[in-house]
Length: 377
Image 1 (cartoon, rainbow, N blue to C red):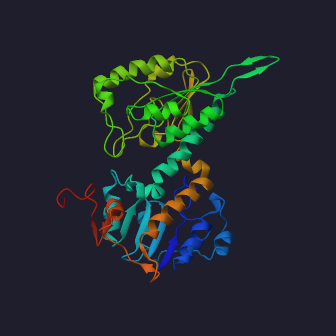
Image 2: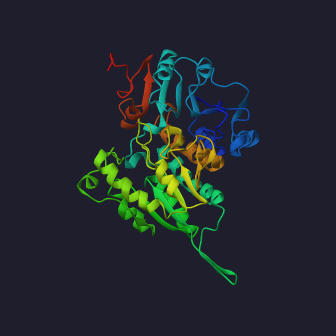
Image 3: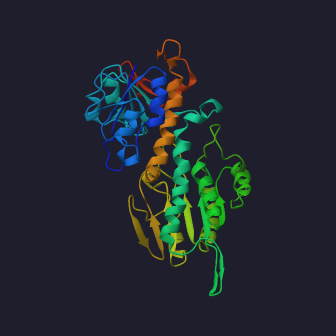
């Protein structure tokens, strides 16, 4: 069993799919591990640390690897260097990328999308969406505080009192909860909103106040998988009116709302932005999916009227060392389910619910029911 750890080719991707710690664990499973030269440098893992953990460093990887580990889906150029039948595991971003999935299928690759991991107890330690969103929520507050230019906690000094910053978190998933906790630790006064009723208790348990139109639709606004449902136009209008009034008084707004497979919902209108206080800040964590905030620009911090809108790309990658370590552990835990410990070789159970939920391509075809070509489906 030969596992290859690729160097990411995207300019805005400093993360790596393995750490020295996970290399040691792969070796214990009987794997031979090869790491692309320089793959971990941007994440604080030099080649020497991978070598010390038992990996081989190589300029080119993949040609004879049974399994290739990546952060992002491999490019067309990368795929040509992989052998037919190789297993590729990454964050595949499959929605709307049919041509890329077909390319992997045509190359004979068996590919797995880590972000499709089911949200069940057994798979918690493999949940890349949670591990990366957790860091994104933390970083959003740090970026917001940096851009804000004022103190976050209330400070009583001989020269006068500095009021606590008011932080409003929109969307209380993993990222939102971490944003609330971080803002509270920094001394801010925090409010939060979400369309899922179950989040109210979570918000209040962190010491923040919950804001929502709590009508009948609100009480049924969560899917079986724990994601937010898309709300009716009527509800969106009522919630928007409540939020619009609240946003006027906020110093920092953090938006985190995403719906799998769809553009990010627009939560903050241009009128809301214009109503904010001078010097206020909005951090849009959904900017890569079209953004929650009108006026957000992907990859930039822009001044829009009285507010600055922060639209950094790949926010988990802004904490590359921590993000890589957690992602690498997610991969290790998943791969551990594919290995026969006695024989020390790959032994995938194709009927395992984790395999079925995450496998995109196999035997020359796209096999995931959500992404199969219409005729095949």
